[in-house]
Image (cartoon, rainbow, N blue to C red; front, top):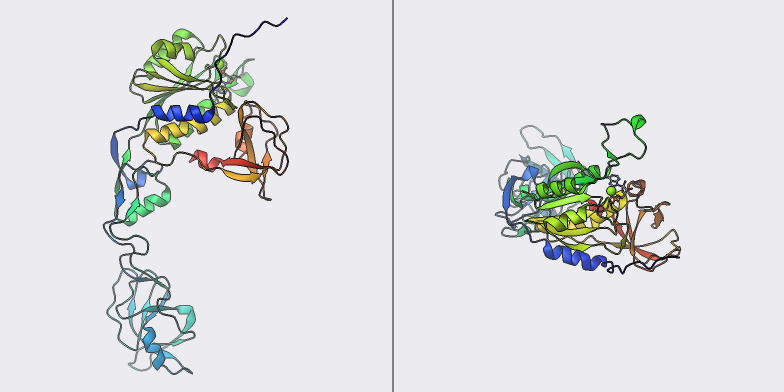
Length: 420
Ligand code: AMP
Ligand code: MG
C-alpha cells in the first residue's frame, strides 16, 4: 500500500523564477574608479565619451610612399618615376608634399598635406640617387585616390560614446578606453559574496589524500567552481568553508554571513532531507521567497533575504549547482552591478543525438558542437557527473515534455555565453 503524498506547491517555471529573482536584484549604488589595466570583467558605471578623434590624423596603413594622384597623369607611362622628397616615420609629422614627388612613409605615420594615396613599397622599385639628386621610385601600379589611407576619426569620432554605462568590460574594450586616453574607469563596486558549502561527507582536497578517504567521504568540488565563477563575475568572495549538517552550525554560519555581504551563496542542504538545514535556518533568521524550480538538473534552488543580504541556496549535486549558478546567479550578480546585457544568447543547432524520454521539467543537457555543425550529447546526464560539464561546451535548453529526434533543431546556449 502506498500512502498519498501531501500536496506539494507547484515547481516554479525558470522564466518566472528568474524574473522574480531579478526583481530583487536592485543595482548596487556604490561606484569605484579603477585603473584601466584592472577593469577587465567589471561593469561600467559611466558613459565613456571621447575627447578626441581616433585616429587623430589621416595616416598610412602600409609601409610605402605617399603621393598625389593628380601628379601621375604627367608621368611617362613607359617609365613612371617620382623623386622621393622626404621621409616620415611613425611618431613624426612630415612637411607638405612637394608637387611631383613622393614621400617615404611608414605604417601609422601621418599622411602629409597634399598627398592623397599610399603606394605599397611592394608596388614600386627604389632607384638610388644619382649625384646630389634625390632617390626616386619607379611605380609598378598606379594607386587610386585614398588607397591605404586610414581616415582621421574612422574608428572614433570626437564626442562619441564609445562604451555606455552598463557595458561589461572586455580586453578589447580596455584597449578602446585607452585609445581615447582613459587610464581610470568608473565601475560598479564588486559585490561581496559569502560562500559556504554544506555536507558532513565533504572533505577538502589537500587535507585528506585519496588513499586515506573514509567510506562515505567525497571531495568538495562545488567550492572550487563556485569560487571561480564568482571571481569571473567580479565578486569579492569570503569563503566560509564547509558548514556541518547541523541546524545550530547552519544558523551561526548564515547569521555571520549576513554581515557585510551583499549575497550569501550556499551549496547543498537545501532539499527536503532531515539533514538539510539551510531552509529552516534562512526562515528563522530572515525569509525565503522562492524555492524549487521546474528545471533539470537544479530543482532545489532557493532565494531569500537575511537582514540586508540576499540569500541564494544552490543544490548540492555538482552539475545542478553549476547549472543553476549559470542560469540564475550569474544574471543576478550582473544585474547587481548594473550590467545592461545579462541574458545569454542561444543558437539553433541540429541534434546529432536522440533524447527519447521527455521530462516534465525544462532540461539543460550538456552537449558539444561537432565539426559537422551539429550537437553531440554527453552520454551520462546525471546531476552528479561533473565530467559532463567539462566535456560539454554548452547546454541544450529543452522545453518541458519534449523528446528530441536526430536532426531536430534545438536551442543551444554556449558556455562562452555563460562563463564570461
Ligand atoms: P544535498 O543537496 O546536500 O542533499 O547534496 C546532494 C548531493 O550533492 C549529495 O550526493 C552530496 O554529497 C553532493 N554534494 C553536496 N555538496 C557537494 C560539494 N560541495 N561538492 C561535491 N558534491 C557535493
Ligand atoms: Mg547535504
